[in-house]
Image (cartoon, rainbow, N blue to C red):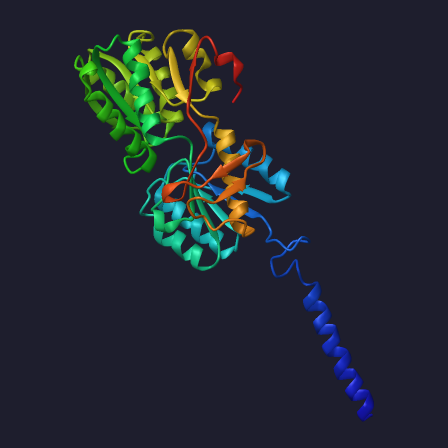
Length: 339
C-alpha cells in the first residue's frame, strides 16, 4: 500500500506537469510560442463609412496573421461611452485595444489601467495622451494634412473669399491639430484675401453636420467655401449646400472617401478633396498591434516591424508610425478608387 501510494503520488505529479506543458492555449501562447492575437478596434463611432473601411483593413490583416478581430464602439461619437468600452475590453482580457479617440485625455485613465493589465494599446486616426498608449498609427503627417486642405480650397477660390471649417468634436485630437495648421497656413501673405469666419462642430454626426452647414450658409451669406476634415462632415456639408441650391457656389473640400464624394466631385459641389486609404490605416494598425503583442517590438522610436503588403514600417519620434502622404481626389482620378 505504501508503494502504491508513492507511485500514485508520482503519477499525479506527472499528470500535472504534463497538463502544464500542454496548456499553451490557456496561458496565452500559440503553437509557435507567440501570444494570441485577440485584437479589438474601438473607433470614434461605429456605422461610419470611414471606420467601416478601416475595420475591413483590420480584418484583412487578422486573416493574414491568423488572429481574431472585432470592432466595438458607440453609435455616436462619445468619449464617455468609449471609456465604458475600454473597461469592458480590459475585463475581457483582449490582447490589444486599437482606439481612435474622441477625447485624448478622457480616455487616458482607462487605457492606462488596460496597459497595467498587460493589454497593448495602439491609437489610430485620432491619438490619445502619449502615456496612455504604446503606438500611434498616424494616417499622414499632421502638418501636411492640415495645409493641403487650405491649399486645395484656395486654388478653387482663386485665393479670395470667406471660408469656414466644419470639424468633428471640439475635443478630437486629430481635428484640432489639423485646424491649427490650417490657421497657420492661412496666415501666409498669399491668403490675405481669404478670411476664416468660423469653426463649427458637427460631432461626426450626419444630421448635426448638415444643420451646422445650413447655419453657416445663413450666418455668412458671402461664404465661398467650407473645409470639413471629417468624412461624415464633408458629405453632409456637400448635401446641405446642394439642398439650398448653392452647389458650385459654395465649394466643399476636406477629407472624404471617394465612394461617398464621387457624385459631388462630378457635379462641381466638391471639385477636389483629400484622404488616405482608411483600409490601409486599419491594416497597418492591426499589424502594429500584433507586433507589440508578440513581443517583436516594444514601441520605441527606431524599431521596425513587418506590415504585410505595406512593407517594413519604422517607429518615429513620439512612438508614431506614419501610413503615408494623403491623396488628392478630383474628377480625373476619382473613378480609379473604390472605398
